Amino acid sequence: MGKRKRVAVDQTAQDEGQKLLPQKRFYRQRAHANPFSDHTLDYPKSPQHMDWNAHYPGAAPGKRPEFADIGCGFGGLSMTLAPLFPDSLILGMEIRVQVSQYVQDRITALRTANHGDPTAHYQNVSIVRANAMKFLPNYFAKASLSALFFLFPDPHFKARKHKARIISPTLLAEYAFILRPGGIVYTITDVKDLHDWMRTHLENFPLFDFVSEEQLRAEGKGDIVDAVYTSTEEGKKVERNKGEKWLACFRRIEVPRI
Image (cartoon, rainbow, N blue to C red; front, side):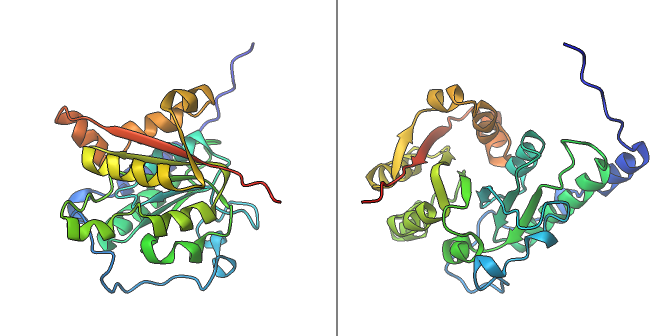
């Protein structure tokens, strides 16, 4: 087999993009936000009112996101997946103002730096500032996503705060609605109690079946699993502290029509 021809990337644009890469120290904000607080947010009335062309200018008309990173933080997962799936649209959702602005600035810089690259072009990744616990169905139509990611979410340790956890029976109904049959919910945390909570709620929900890490790797999703483990700021912090990570993944089942 002949070697794949290397496509040259504009070095000037690459250098300029590297200079534009944002620095986190200018985007500091508290680690979590209260999802029940009133936030000044713009959101579409329905998925049909969402202008995805503004987020993905190079995408074909009508193309919609397939991967959604809920509470994407500084965008580590989204940026890792973008070059791995150059033909799929990836969307990060983050409620914090400064953090979402950082991700947007990072995407802009990476698009400039990698202009002309056939895979790592970052034209397929974007972010919206949104409260996913309230407005997720406003963005995504029924069965439109192939993957949902919940990576190191706020554990809300106190029992009275458990209602604010991102995995709950009510929210699982919304996740099942927007996830296509066969789609995967990826969850990971370094808090064992939260892992048990998320896994138990997903196991008890009738539209999700547990799928092992080994099975996902056998299906060719190893790159995604690796990114779930290692790409986020939180995941890297756990590694530095030699902590443990708890992964739980579930497949959206198809309900036969009667």
